[in-house]
Amino acid sequence: MRADGVLLRDATADDGRALTEALYSAVNWQGTVRLTRDDIAADPRLSHYVAGWPRPGDLGVVAVSGGEPVGAAWCRTFPPGDPGYGFVAEDVPEVSMGVVPARRGQGTGTALLDGLVTRARARGTRALSLSVEDGNRARVLYERAGFVVVGRSGDSDVMLLDL
Image (cartoon, rainbow, N blue to C red):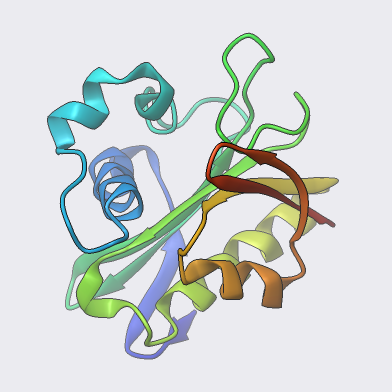
């Protein structure tokens, strides 16, 4: 699938680095480096989004431009004892998504989210969840896709999309 000069493809076992870079972009969405890659790797609350990619049940897409990944969206489930920030239920995969700053606002995020949602529906996934911090412009993208707020944690909303 192509969108705004990017090729969208399924994430594979070789995409651990691409997902890690997307997570880095997501964590630092404000444009300043709040956490380094080493900080993310050392924090189990963040590293579990990419550790051991792919685990059974994981699903993801990668946006590629000029042969290089420029973003990714993926989802995985977490147990109640090790929840993600957007945890809703053990059987509801949590979405993670990040786009490199140079590609933001050009439709890459929309293509990634649409691609992930389409694949999750085809797989028979009942719902997807995510967490979005206050002020993050990606909230508009999530709302357009049909995600609704179902909870709050700190300075973030937990959102859910029934599929």
